[in-house]
Length: 283
Image (cartoon, rainbow, N blue to C red; front, side, top):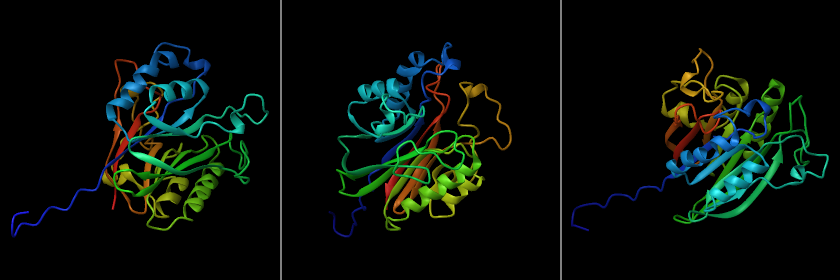
């Protein structure tokens, strides 16, 4: 160090966090060019790899897509697929697309993990309440950053897509569960909320200490639709039809960038949703 010159404070390591609704497979309406899983799966992985995320939180993962993503992202640890509700020999299966968390093995070490169901009986796999269309759940992991020794909690969510009663009560349950951690503890949610930012269920998060990364960093200017139905850049942007995909932070986790990923190759898109990426630091 040169006399009289202060060393710059070391920059906080950046965590690249991606949310990705990859669309459930096996739907009859997707038996068409550019929509079918086999047509888009390689491109989907290419889009993910291009962003080099430290964490990818996926929604709508089902048997074939889970096996494929696990193979293609073998340098990531994955959590959140296996469970009694996914056993095809039980009656508890409700065509559940799972929320699976992938995080780099080289970057993080797993501390703990868990799953709870967005219902009045959150410990019962596949449980349904509040007129929800199908069973919904929250998967979470608590990890240590190998670079800094800091811990953070990652939560993967997909709210109901039809029942407003369910969305509101599911949001309340998630906020209440996360509140058991110290206020400063860094937590990150990736989610398909099936809701716009002005709706009660989303406002319940932002009024209880959660920060909407995109909204905060873009001064409230909305992107438009993130669920584009494979129409992408051809999707008309109607007033009030904004994002339903989110990255939220709480506690010492702070986003310094957040963008919607609009990559496509002609009419080929990785999913019927745009993915999102945020750079997050722990203050």
